[in-house]
Length: 299
Image (cartoon, rainbow, N blue to C red; front, side, top):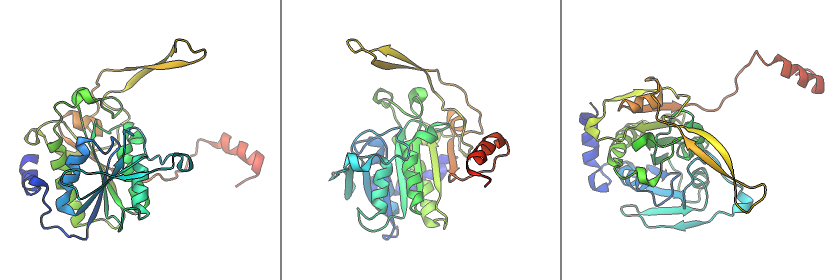
């Protein structure tokens, strides 16, 4: 199913050449794994046919950073130009991915951007990982500035842990498959960008393109496919009242098919549109509200 749909787009983007796009489109490509990540480079070169690509990415690993900016008056962020094959302009920032996007939104890297594309993250960002993912946090930060964002993640061998993966899990990573899926989706997105910016969370199985079993809209699940199961304090030798945290990982679990993680487990691409954080009404907090009214008066 996907092979027939995506093969033309993948073929047109071969070699990284920009083909037939509107040169006014500017695409910011970032990630949370650092500017040296293979997934970032593959994604950025794939995006070139859709517009002018500028990489602005952290100078080091920032997985799990969510949409954090850091303590700006203390970290005093720096920016360094870097060279990446096939990319005309690339920058490394001494800060998390959300900060990279914020600087870009504020004009640090030239004209306004039309789209933020973040990834390719090694490890599915599904379930509760959505809350912690720096890959997704970058897309959220773009939407704050009225820019749509696409977060692209790919499962790894053993499913990773809490949306993160170690280097020894990436030996057989099918980066080209995730890139082809992102290529097809972004092709349609930039052809008709919504007036209200969107955050799209794309999760791709780690298999060949013709082995994908399709795609589906999904709900955000409650669990990742493999979770951290315990944290124990081990005394740090030679240091009083100091400890190392020993973490253990659970086994991969089967997730419901209608969730993002369950879809990826079944070799299908998960597409999730993530909403803004909005206020909600609650009727079960009367005791707390009465206590507040006792201090401040009725609202």
